[in-house]
Length: 290
Image (cartoon, rainbow, N blue to C red; front, side, top):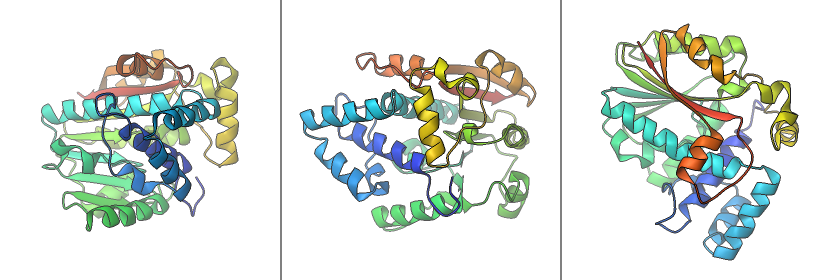
């Protein structure tokens, strides 16, 4: 990500959520009235027009052609993580930490989070813009949310937790969406080691990509073009895991893998009528600290 700009991929995810919110109420996977506030003027215009069915179909076709599978995968992933988060809350977690929060709006739109402290940690450029837009939408920042800005490459999470007095004795649920693939292996390992310091019963919801997409992008439909496009906006993917080794990887951090599904699998579950190829290399995993 460029040092002085908000993440472009965060913008695209907000667009996908805004488009899904404009679908008919009986067909949408979720409602996110805040997503549109993070969009550029052009994306806002497209979103407004998408309430017209034939224009919505045209917009979907354009996105599918440009980034095959990203839209359906993105909205299905949002719904899936929402449900995993609710499951963790029902199981007794006492705080939520969203790492690399981007334009995540779960603290605003999910009612079951309003009674819990939510900590969002992100790069200053994205975090500052997000707080500005949230204030504009709500008139103030939500009282249960703490927004922490940090340069992840310059300060460890251990240092940050000490400075910000983050309580590691509480069972916590971490949401780490759309981040690991931009980090080094050492940075990913250090983050899981940090999570291991939290109380027993801490959950982690995280995304990762099949490492084969980085090593051999042609193995996946749309893979070569996607990685080239990411290179152009300086948001290169640098880390992945082999899915059959994920359980063993998490075992190093005293975590048990509970679920691990590919975009193809959670997309087929939530959107069986919207068949689409692409993004099968993207995955969501759910783990708990022993």
